[in-house]
Length: 288
Picture 1 (spheres, rainbow, N blue to C red):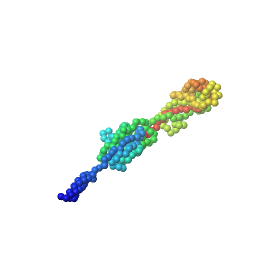
Picture 2: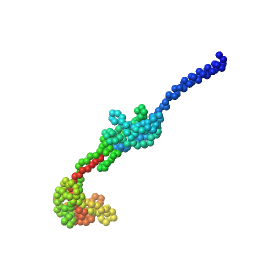
Picture 3: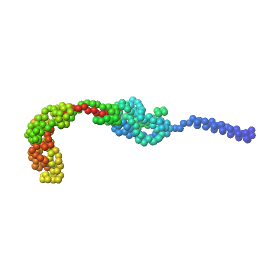
Picture 4: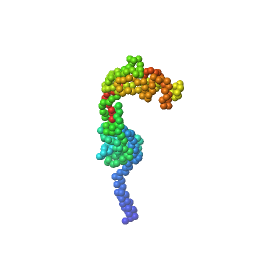
């Protein structure tokens, strides 16, 4: 065999061998890498969450991943976050948790990121959801779950009570004079009690304005107008001459009281008025 033939044989052999070795390259797949530095942010009781991560690769691109929450026995999708990109950085992207009824008692619920194509785990967020129960709100709160029952705006309507100011039973005396008789009775529908469902007498109160001073001269420029009061819890009786702290409204000279000196603006009567106060009932709706 000549040199040329031998050389051609060797060349053909190596060409076929190399070609055979290159065929598997056509079936190779690019390896995937999960995103890193997963962070979840969530405000207590709030429906909105935000998530961040550093991009991975080979996880399906723009819609390749989704968020899930732990139900207590398995994992379920967060429906607003089912088309996420694990192959790009995410910086505080916000999503709402599922609609009402999604999970009761959801404090400390875990959240994870998974690849959709094969349900591979990309990572579980170290931070969990937070929900501590609190009192209801007087107005609708569709993005807050006050009672942490997984309902975003459930409500209850029930009875409540409060106090309204009614009549001034001694106005005919020309002023609320100490010693004058008063009689509130058990019900009233005047003044602030008009139109309310009054259920009974609460208290009788008289108020008297006075000036507060920093020294005994009662001539200081630091005088501040305030009100002193007396509350009586009997529906009938006599208007008092002493305030709750024992000050005599008939004595309108300077009187020492703690670090201050007090002087009533006028004497002989409770000139800010005496009124009867009553309890009343009403329905109130609270949102949770």
